[in-house]
Structures are given as C-alpha cells and as structure tokens.
Length: 114
Length: 112
Image (cartoon, rainbow over the protein chains, first blue to last red):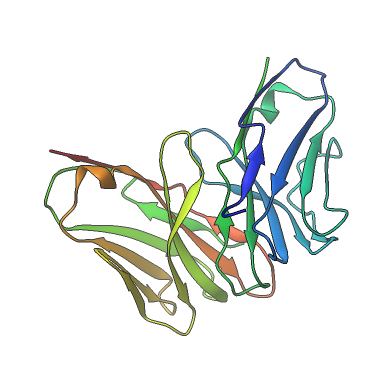
C-alpha cells in the first residue's frame, strides 16, 4: 500500500479482555516499530522488528504486551488482560532501512479500556 | 538517558507570522533528528529529516536546523497559515539503537 495501515482505528475493550492490533507497513520496509502515545504526550517506544526478528522489546511495559511479525511484513501487537492504564493511541511506523532512515507512521489505533 | 524537550508547549499566532519552534536534546550521540506534524486524532506525518552530519533541511515554507554539539534543533515556519495548525513533534534517533525518542510537542494554532 501507499502508506502504513493500522486496524482497527478505534477499539473499546472491557477491562480484562485481550486485544490484537494490526499494522501493515509500507511494502518492502525492513524496519517496523510500535509506539504508545498517551493523551498530551509524545509517543514512547515499545518494540522494534528488523524483518521478522524482534531486536528490541525494551519498551514493552509488562509481560501482558506481546508483538510479532512472523513473515517480516504485517505485525500484530497483542495486549492480554487489558487494564485502564493501557488506554492510549498505539502507533506503528516502518522504515526502508535500519538506523538511519526516515520513519513513516500509520494513523494509529486508539484503545480505550473501560 | 536521552531527554527531548520542546518549547513552547503551545503557541497561538495570527496568520502570516514567521514562527520558530524549539527542540533540545541531552545526548548528542544521534543518527538523525526528525520533525513530525500530528493533527488531532491522526498519526504522525514526517516533515523533515536531518542527518547528524547536516546543518539544515528545507521543504517549502519549512526549514529545520540542527546544532548537534549544543543539542538543539529549530523548526522555522514562514508565512504561517491556518492549515499549519497542528502539534509539531521532534524526535531523535539514538546512535547504536533503533528507537526514536520524542519530545512532548508544540501545539500550534494559527488563526485567520
């Protein structure tokens, strides 16, 4: 596709429910990132993939958060047993190369846990 | 730990003014610095990318400068328009890592 695509755009989950957020990066982009953005704040890094390898997951806030990119393209961020503090916008970004190339972001998924 | 600060947090100006948005960072070991625009309820749109070896980049009415040694970048917007109203975020790409570290943004409103 022309840009990074994320789905769903909005998700309301009851506390304790599991959710899965999808990211479809720009075709051919090697690097894929997940960020979490709380209201009024800048995005914060969650995890990074280079092709199918998850090279950095230091930003995942707890073991309830899990991300995968099994074929080096589409990625899924899964949150188990959602809590109210998980409410945020989850942004996905991709870039063509590694380290030094421009990152392009999707529209984000707004997660509200009630 | 790298910290990125943006000043001012919010700015409201009449149409036509030239603007300067500031970004500072504490660790100069960066690959590059990127400026983004974020409209309400939307994702981030990349505006300009400055490599660590560069001093500035220009795109249309936008000009971004980078002074790595002092840990500063500025985004200059010429002849502002109401359509420029958005939140502007700067982010540094840390050397030897893969993550962008973001500031909290400057919320800009340009009124007619």
